[in-house]
Each structure stands twice: as structure tokens, then as C-alpha cells.
Image 1: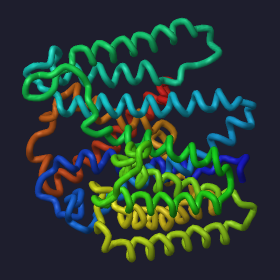
Image 2: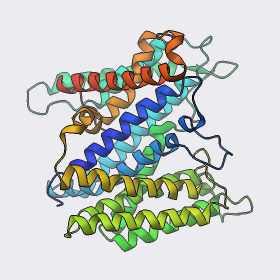
Image 3: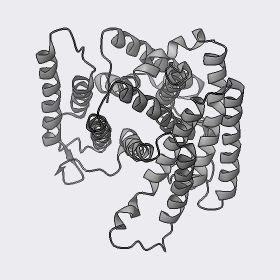
Image 4: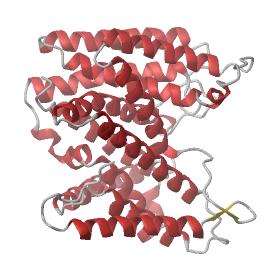
Length: 389
């Protein structure tokens, strides 16, 4: 199993990115029921929209063992793998930082119009993180394009202004979705490096991270000197718990066991998470915004029940044709994720008439728009634009 491609992981990733594009776009549609919107921070409930980000963290975790095992088989050294991990984390943090600040821009004080600034950001991201061919004799050209992208990013940083006084500089009010994924990825890779394929050890760390999350949210907690940096890390530990849960499920998937038994173990894991989320709900309630333990465990439960269905359809039964349209999102997720922002930066947020931003018409428009983004991602992928961090 470990040496074969697990197609259901690509499908699950593609489905998650597709739904993420949809919910991000439909968030601007008015007149929709509450279950199609993010729950408020203090609402103590969650909608399907609040499961999309956890699902992506989960699939990031599922990919970690497979990616690390592949690099080890290729003979990469410890330092080569470490450099890849750190550069990927840094890339996610940088992109997240720029995207968050772009939304908080002081448009009157900024030296570049907001839409032009955002177009520059996403074009720079494509130039820097595109997976250029390695053997066509154009390495100098590709290096030049990457340097150009870096120079654009530096220029955007120097021209950026935010705050009521037009202050200079990018600051992380939060890290953005990509940045949060970056931190969760780093935490989880460190755990995997320490435990390798020891599922009991990873399960123990998951339980520990849940306890740490609960503890860090206690106002009465006083951390000793040297650990005070942990005070702001509750969310990162919560997100890493989701990523580690996906990592653990990936290891279950690689066991030399029947597909029936593998699916049973996944479903049991979902039941355990459901029970854990239920009993921890009185502590902080359910909240995506606050990254509460019950939200983490309920989201993990849903992933543990949804993925086996996709695994059974795609890898066990071989039904893959239905998921063909998800392929660009599954194999080129970063490009697919940033394309909507690039689109609106080019055409403007008021591109669609108001009648298509309300009610059922707005939902259908967002669905068609999401399919359009997948089509553009597929076209760009065929043209050789594949973003890799």
C-alpha cells in the first residue's frame, strides 16, 4: 500500500479545496440560512462550512507520511528534508501574512491601488512557487522568474500601508488560512519525525495536544519562565491536532490489512472523536473561531467518517470517473485556492450583478464560479503552472 498511490487522498483533497472555494465565494451571498454560513464565535454550534478548514488540515496530515516516505526512498538526507519542511512552512506563513494584510490595507494611504497590489501578490506567488521543469535547459530563466517574483513581493511590502495612520509594514494580526496550515504542518512534521510510524505514540501526542489546548485556554494558567511563548499557541495546538489525526489515519491506511478492517478502524476512530467532542463540549463549547477542543474532535469525527466512503468508492471499488473534475484541485491545490482572489483582484468585487449575489441565484452563481475556477486551474496545470511549497 505504501508504495502505491492512494487516489482517494487526491480526491478528498480536491473535494475539500472545491468546497473551500465555494464557501469562500458564497460567504458574500445574502439571504442564506445560517447553516450555510460560519457559526459565530460564541454560538456553540458548527455548520458544514466550519468543517472545510479542518478537513484541509486533516488531508495535510494524511499526506505527510506519504511525502516523507517518498523523500526517504529517494535517498534525501536529513538536511535536505529539513530544508524542504522549513521552506514550505515559511512559504505558507509568508503567503498567509501577505493575504491577511492585503485585506486590512489602508487603501487611501497605500502607494499602489489595492487591486493592483493584490494582482502583484498572486502573480509573484506563481512566479516563486511554480514547479518549473528540471531538465529542459532553462534553469537560468526559471531562476530569474523566481527572483522577479521575490522582488515583486519585496516591492509590495515596502509600498504597503495599513491602519488609520497609514503605518508602514506587514504585521500578523493573524496568519490567515495558509499561515495556520503552515504552523499545523510544522508542528505535525516535528511530531512525525520524533515518532515516525508509531501509531500509539502519535495517538498519545494527539491526546496531549488536546490537553494542552484546554490548559492554554485557562486564564488562570501561569506558565514558567521559558514556556511563556506557549501562551498564544492554543489555536496552533488545536489545528495541529487535526493534522495529526489525518496523519494517524494515513498510517492506518497503510497497514497490511484488508480494506474492510481499515475502514472499520477509521469508523471506530470517528466514534471515539465523537464521544470526546461530546464530553468536552461543556469546556468552551463548539467554536471554529476559538478553535475549541470539541470543534476539533467533531470535525475529526466527520473526516474519519467521510474519508472511508471516498476510499471505498475510489480505491476499493475503483469508481474514479465521477471525481475527474476534482483533479486540478486535488493535484494543484495552492493554485486553485488563490485563483478566486486573483480573479476578483483583476475584475473587481462588483463584477457580478446584485441579483446574482442573493438567495438561490447567488448559491448557483457561486457553484458555477467554483467549477469555473477548477476549469481554469486545469488549463493552467496543463500549461505547466503547478504551485509547490
